[in-house]
Length: 269
Picture 1 (cartoon, rainbow, N blue to C red):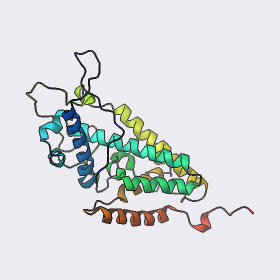
Picture 2: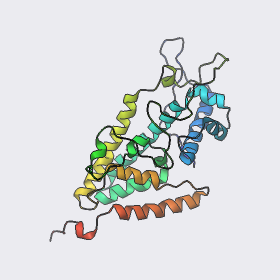
Picture 3: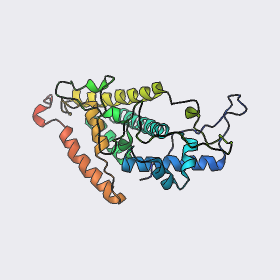
Picture 4: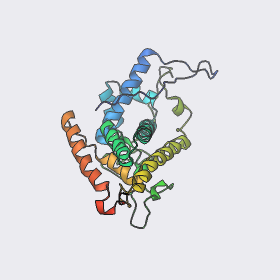
């Protein structure tokens, strides 16, 4: 499944240590785009535990090219997860701003998110499943163990990705393929957590609107909604079959999220 990269503005190494951004060479930029596209496909199909060699093979580049840009698997995983978190946040904002009916807004967000396949690439920590003792909004609090779904078995924390390893040393002397954020160490966790927090907040508004309108079951949480997105997009070899299966599964899950007629407020006469 191809998901085009439309949100990221490429950056590169600085020129002469002045802090001025230099554009990537054309071939380096093309390789980066191939690697990102391949990573979305491979991680979406096999989970974040898939090896970097699979990403390189799908991108039709050498594994050294992948590691020159992303010096560890953890860096690549975080890059993909952050972009997909931002993608889902934008889809939630669009639904919130363009749909007047609360249920229509929530359903639109779910349908567009499942269709994009972004749910398979969410950071696992946003899929925390509550127990009976937790309230419907407990997922908005920080902390908690990540829920594991089939597409996301890899850990996503300080020890993040199984099989992560440093980049092979590049003896060419070139650094124009290096990911700037990675060149100085691990990407900042603050930005990552801010992105997750923003997603939970916007999806929380959709959930609260639908709940207040009596359209959503009272026990449904933000984590439940995100879990639907993550599990309603099965990875099948045939694109048409995958789209049909996703649509059918989502219809069933939406029906499960919706409150029963007896639970909805009576219409005012």
